[in-house]
Image 1 (cartoon, helix red, strand yellow):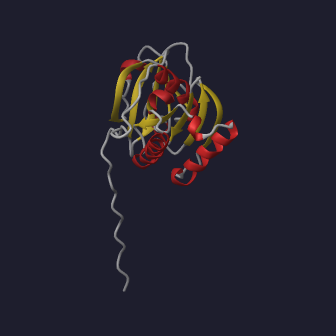
Image 2 (cartoon, rainbow, N blue to C red):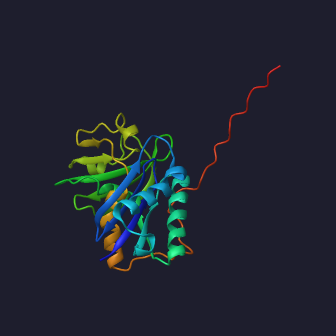
Image 3 (cartoon, rainbow, N blue to C red):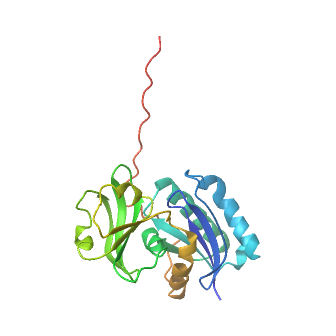
Length: 228
């Protein structure tokens, strides 16, 4: 039996679950439109362990969403996961954020394109088939009316994630289906982390870094006009 703590902080959804052999025992998450991970992540970890009646030393591994996503969100999640792994000598498992997001829906045919917002009209996106197999790698790309045309021309394509919402008015193909209210979650991570744990597919805790995809950009504050 494997007990895995799953941590997801790549977007505005702060999510934590505890699972046994991929089956969730407890989950807690908050998506209030803000990045409140620094305040709520550690209390969420305490809450799910308490609800599942599992002590920290009984965890077999810690899984964390590795990105892409919010720079600050990823740093908070990875730092917490690595801290637990160091403190209790547990293995670290990383889960691709877009792969996890793709598992939040099930389709019979067509393609799944999970998208995360990357400022303005840019998104982080990958393409998956109906079996959740990645058939196009993750890219940071600017969306226009021709985006994903090769998939849309003969198949239904399901767009989901916070990046998809700003694309509705641009990607207007009849085969485009936009799925609302889907975010990366520790719910979908549970099965994915269990599969990796069975294969001993783990990270080097000391050297693991999130997959940012793009460099962090600091936006300078606007200078205030002087008052006389």
